[in-house]
Amino acid sequence: MKNAIAFFDFDGTITRKDTLFEIVRFQKGNIHLYLGLMQLSPWLIGMKLGLITNAAAKEKMLTHFFKNTPLEDFQKKCDRFIEKRLPLLVRRNALEEIKKHLQNGVTVVVVTASAGNWMEGWCQKMNINCIATRLEVKDNKITGKINGRNCNGIEKVNQIRAHFDLSGFDTIFAYGDTKGDKEMLSLATFSFYKPFR
Image (cartoon, rainbow, N blue to C red; front, side, top):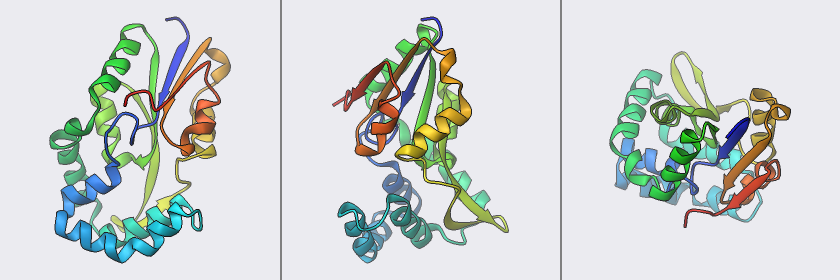
């Protein structure tokens, strides 16, 4: 398809589970995950109730589990996650949709609030583009903070426009599954909400 682009949310759209929880499980184990979630529950509940932002809750979680982790160690484990665990989380029909677009010459872009550390390697293997949240690193260690803005909601649109001139595309597809995707879906000629259930 000439001059077409497709934007895919990742967590919950392409995958069956939220990969932030899964990367913690993979790197720290189930016991540390569940104990940590108990400690973090006030912030997670606050996020669900709309009392704190997704970004603030995410930073609390990243700080709790990964603060002061050497970047090299963190990235090695993310790379293993991409290789060993992530393929098991991907919805087969979502993968088929991506492959169909690629076969038709459509530019495919994952636009995700998940961190590039465990997203970019998967996207490279798929030969697709990746727009993701960046993690702050100081002295070659993860701080637990987000570098810039969390790639969610209107920030997905801001990042898309920063990377692509949408006026150059005749057709825009968009796929998402939460309210954090609705602004991105509004960009599309053809939008799909929770398409791969």
